[in-house]
Image 1 (tube, helix red, strand yellow):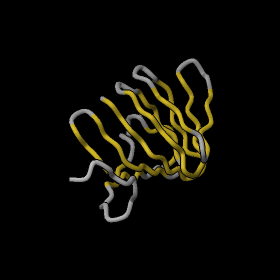
Image 2 (cartoon, rainbow, N blue to C red; image 1 turned 135 degrees about the vertical axis):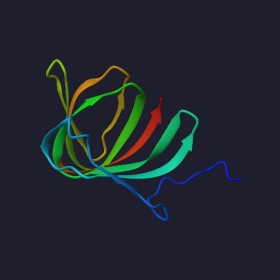
Image 3 (cartoon, rainbow, N blue to C red; image 1 turned 90 degrees about the vertical axis):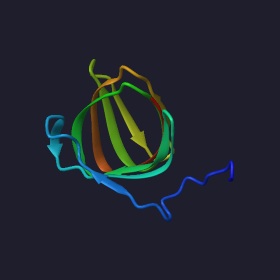
Image 4 (cartoon, rainbow, N blue to C red; image 1 turned 60 degrees about the horizontal axis):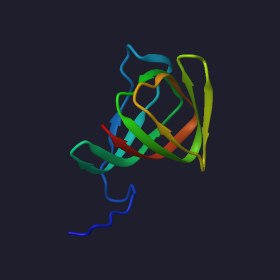
Length: 113
């Protein structure tokens, strides 16, 4: 067993989902997830979404690195954060607000739940 895993979409069958209708604000975003590692409460891989906007509420810790696209996170107090290619962020448990994809966005993610 290798102790190194490449984070890639190659050879992984993606999971296709959409936001729950009760959370959807705008559009018909399609989420594509390539899960690279799921071990206990740690999840990592790649996630892509097409245009749209939905409500989000984090109960876990997530690290993201944006490969391409443009998304906007707006917290419940109205603070706006633009996510663009090359950006990396940590989203902490308790974040509530909206996620809006303005241009199809591809990100790496590591979630600790």
